[in-house]
Length: 317
Image (tube, rainbow, N blue to C red; front, side, top):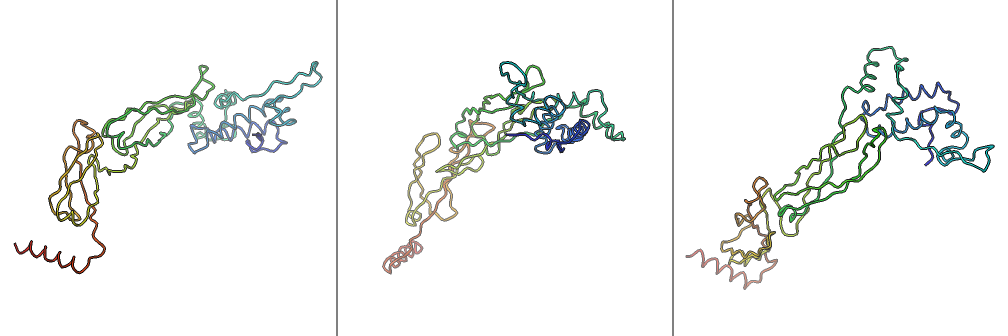
């Protein structure tokens, strides 16, 4: 991708060396990450450093002005040389803080501003009395109900920027983070990996936070440590009794008799058959059976008469 270094520094192509320095001074202070916390400021600050690195160097600037970004970074034939040699390819060192420090050095960056407040702001930027930590990076961790019932190990690969040994340049490296899911964890549980975000010379790496998100289950709905199982039954079953088969998350098949009259708000509770308790996984919540009663859409006259007889017989006793 071709870079327009003049546009990055908000200059036209007739800009003088003094114009270039003045533009970099103004924009670098404005977008320095330790001062500007807006999204994208780090990228802008990086681009400003690269643009100034090129346009402040007479050779680089001459090559860029004549051959553009491709010629600068791809190399060009060296004039009047034997053997058709090519110029070296330009690559930015990738550390805008280094460019920033080299530019300001012992100069007063607020020469154009006659206020103590500006000088104090720069002091906090360059001297860095205290590093600031980036905001936490939050990611969802989708887990099935089985994962949350039994517990499991999840390994997650991340890519992050780390500082090289010279403490000036950085590179992208991959790392595996291991999460030990505990039985009974609930929706919204947060797992924090401290300072595992991108590294930088003037910032403390952000924490990476994974947040548990519970996937829907085909049989159960969860309420804290209880499991809800809804069974469809007929009106006949609701009035005369029946049994419900439930396969639990730990592989048991429960046959549960229901001899009560089942109405719409009726529930049958089995203690100790729910989810493990987060604070003590040896203890478990309840399995709660609820019922969806299917009423017949139509009844013939004879059926209605028989039902009336049956109900009258019951209440007469």
